[in-house]
Image (cartoon, rainbow over all chains, first blue to last red; front, side):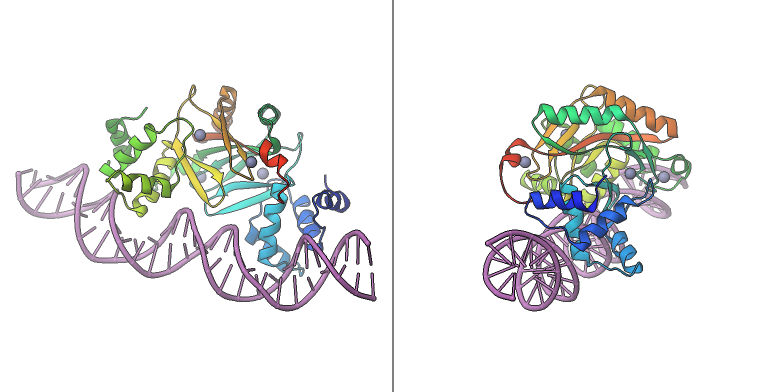
Amino acid sequence: MYTASSLKAELNERGWRLTPQRETILQIFQNLPRGRHLSAEDLYNLLKEDGEPISLSTIYRNLKLMSRMGILRELELAEGHKHYEINQPSPYHHHHLICVRCNKTIEFKNDSILKMGAKTAQKEGYHLLDCQLTIHAVCPSCQRSLLPA
Amino acid sequence: MYTASSLKAELNERGWRLTPQRETILQIFQNLPRGRHLSAEDLYNLLKEDGEPISLSTIYRNLKLMSRMGILRELELAEGHKHYEINQPSPYHHHHLICVRCNKTIEFKNDSILKMGAKTAQKEGYHLLDCQLTIHAVCPSCQRSLLPA
DNA sequence: GAAATAAATGGGAAAGACTATCAATTCTGA
DNA sequence: TCAGAATTGATAGTCTTTCCCATTTATTTC
Ligand SMILES: [Zn+2]
Ligand SMILES: [Zn+2]
Ligand SMILES: [Zn+2]
Ligand SMILES: [Zn+2]
């Protein structure tokens, strides 16, 4: 769990700075309910409605930065744009089962997957940032529908 | 392993057709060496060089279609565009360890992950198409480099 | 096998997500 | 307090992917 000051420490370590925008973004994701994922646009609109807008440029820049730091996870839950969520360790770490037709997403947990991922990264000398099992499938209701594709 | 006629059967089942373009695309992916992944543009150029060009529209349409059918896998190996490879069953099925800085990708196998994915999909009544463990990390040489971000 | 029906292709235009640029602002450390 | 460096915000630009539609091709029917 990041606090403003632990985020600051980690940023400073790399010669970067803690800004109000970065702190706000971190807080949003930390308080997001389980199973909620935000796109850049979602976050932009959410902040605008809350009366503390952040420019889209800054949002895109920081979503990428925080993903590269391992603070956020970058998810492909729908076509055309990415979604983000906070990257949590073992008891909260989870994966996604996605319907490729309607994008209905189910989260599920499995500790052994994270362990295997960490082991694989270590074996190759890679520094682990995120480990996600993504299952592409067709949900029950989309199976019943006779719509094409 | 798909043949032209098994692909035709599967297409016809859904009211679709086997075209020379679809057959060509399937062949390309089936003959691709291990560890090679193609973007839409890669495939377009490859076919053009081979003297049997297919339009970009058709390529995009069919990469999507064949992914939705479970014949191809849609991978996020680099930012900005997708990569595709043939979707193979258990002994050949594999996953990806990706450096988020230089996109160096290592493939690795793990049968238990596919089993877990299949089990999860089944439990929720989803029809499985693809199951991929994606590990985002920083490779050894990028760890040594002092470049920002 | 020819005609009718429906699906697929190709080409170009369009959409839409993301990035680059740069002047103005803000943070940090001397 | 001041200089140097990083960050922001606004906008223009890039680039992948989708849309549109006339033409072509595959399948079905007679
Ligand atoms: Zn999630
Ligand atoms: Zn669905
Ligand atoms: Zn692969
Ligand atoms: Zn690297």
